[in-house]
Length: 411
Picture (cartoon, helix red, strand yellow):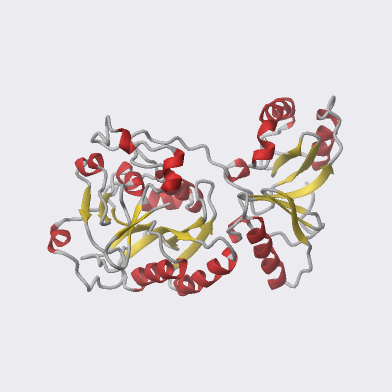
């Protein structure tokens, strides 16, 4: 494998339309390290850099799905024999423990799917299981490939940053996949085992109809769902959900909880400020939340929101963010404790909500698991309302509690 001190171009993947944001983010990253590196995009979902020995960790970038250190570019592959030149470029890398063959996630590259399968089948024999880095072949077009390896700090957990998650038929909306992906991508295995425990307590702000609550209930957590909208009847029948029709920005838990999750439609800075307040007051131990970004200047909006959260990094918490595959015009942020086994809540939950929420208990269980399981009670069985289409999700499948106490439609 090529040593990291040698300058190589980088190739990065992102969501279509987010290329300018990733470019701005990369330029800021290089500028902060005094490196003058060209960054541009000439193809949807792909950002390229000039040669550089400074390589960011994928975890340092919000708008990148995957990252490759490019060691060979093959722009004029012959249609009769692509395998020979690609194989030679892979052999030049030296031993590699795994190989992914993919194309950028865009409409223009969808027709390449059969070709990707054929190339992958022919090249997998070169894999040598062991400790060597992972190799990758990205087909930018039918006759254009880039070959390289994951950075020393590691690439995406899923090739191309695209997890193949199955939509649970019992879930009330497809937004459930966003939280599932966040748990898989933004948390380590150790954190999932320590924090996603049966019996843990959680609050879901902007819960209706219950897509995110579903993921918590599937892990046998007890959830307080805060929303003026209706929460799925099947989730309520599980016995693990308490629904309070309250304003998500004014709600205060009667005692600290293990998890805060939030998918409310509001300005990113206001949501970030709300989450920071929950941690400052000791009301939660960990959080996952969405920030709805403007159509333009997304990187700037995230940078401003991050200022609200930076104080947490000096108080025993880590902040991670990513524009996930199941996100749309938004990013997902996770705040987790540096020591996942630490007790929940260091401050007092001083502002108590309604008596109904005070009466409920939030027990904790010792058996750790980060995997989602089907909730014990039937969830939304036989209801077509609880299984909307992707188009339905675009029109709004979740609700948020607005400052006025009225529900907003979710994206």
